[in-house]
Image (cartoon, rainbow, N blue to C red; front, side):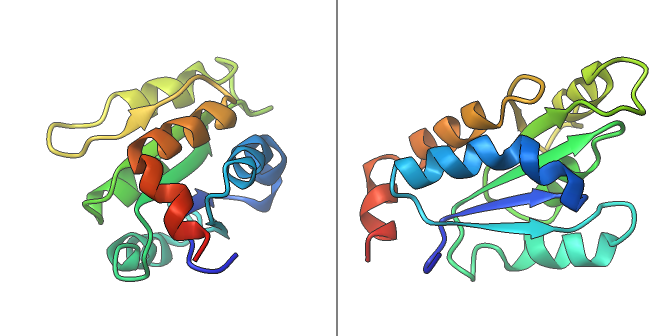
Length: 143
């Protein structure tokens, strides 16, 4: 999409199906977005660069889906002043069925805020992003 306002980031291509609801919701609202795969653990420099350059590339909100230790939303938040919304994802490797990811995202240190929606609830992340953008979100994406 041209002129994306929302960046959706996951650590692995296998996370795409669970984040599809966010993309569908943004498309239904006419909000341009982009989807990137960048792992906080395997590509920390790429994640940092994405966060640092997000605003200058026109992004206004970031959504990060992550499972297990769920570092991705916090790492992005450490490198941008944009709002970051974390989506905790279930993993077959998790012994806590996504609760580990939820706690990792919700328990950010002071000064590194990350909003957190429910486990596997990418749609709510998109709804929250739309509310953060307000009416201007759909207007700018139409240009």
